[in-house]
Image 1: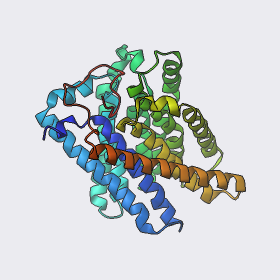
Image 2: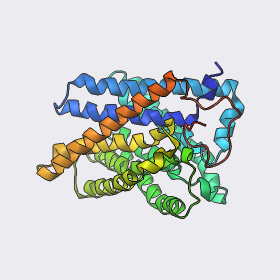
Image 3: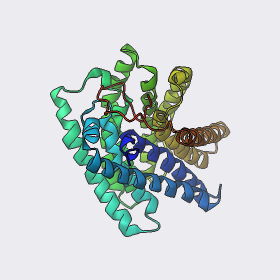
Length: 332
C-alpha cells in the first residue's frame, strides 16, 4: 500500500495518450481501415487506466494527504491534477456507446470538476504568485487542454454549441499563454535533464485544438483546421530536433507528456487522410499516423519495462515541492 502512495499525479497523463490512441483507431474502424474492436480495446484501456489512477488518487488523499497537498501547492505539478476531472470527460466519450447514463454523469461531473479546479487553483495566480521558472508547457493543462477535451466530448454527444464555447475558451487560453511559456523556454534557466520531458506538452495544443474543432464542426477539415494542423507540424519539427536533449536524463514516465499531442496528431491525421484527395497530404497523414502510433506503443512498452524493473515510481521520500525539478512522473 505504501507503493500506491508514491504514484504521482502526473501519471494521469497516461490516460490522455492511451485513450487518445484508442479514439484514433476507433475512428479508423468507422471508416473501415481496421476492425472495430481495435479502437474499442484502446479506448476501454484508457478508461481503465483513468479509473485505476482515480482510485489510487483517492486512496492517496485518505492515507498520504501531505503528499497530495504538496502536489497541489507545487507550482510545477499542480496543473496535472486537472487531468483527473478532464480524464473523466474523456471516459464519458469512451463509454457513451455502452452506458449512456454513466457517460452523461461523467461528462457533467468532469466539466464541473475542471472548471472548479481552474477557479480554485488557477484564478489566484492572477495575483502574481506563479514563479516564471515553473511556467512550463504543463501550465497549458488546466485552461487549455481541459477545455479542448470538453469540446471533444460535447460535439459527438450532440451539444456542438456548448462544444464551441469550450473550444473558444481553450483556444484563447492557449494563444495568451503560449508567448509566456515559449519566452520562459527560450530565455531559461535551462531545465535539468529529469525535468525536460514536460516540454513534450508543447506538441499538444495545436493538434488537440484541431481535434476539438473537428469534433464540434461535424468533422469538416476546412482551412482553419489546416491552419491548426500546420502549426502542430511546426511544433513536431522543433521538438524532434531536441530529442537527444530530452533523453539526456534517460527514459522516464514523464515522457508521457508527449502522448496527448501524439494521440491528437493521429486523430487529426486520420481525418485529414479521409477528407482530402491530395496525394501529398494523404502520404503525410499516413506517415504521421504510423509515427504517432509507433511512438505511443513504444511509450507503453518502456513504461511496462520500468514497472517490471521496479523503477516506474519515484523513491519513497517526502513529496518534492521545488517548482521545476519535479515534473510529471519523473524518477530520481
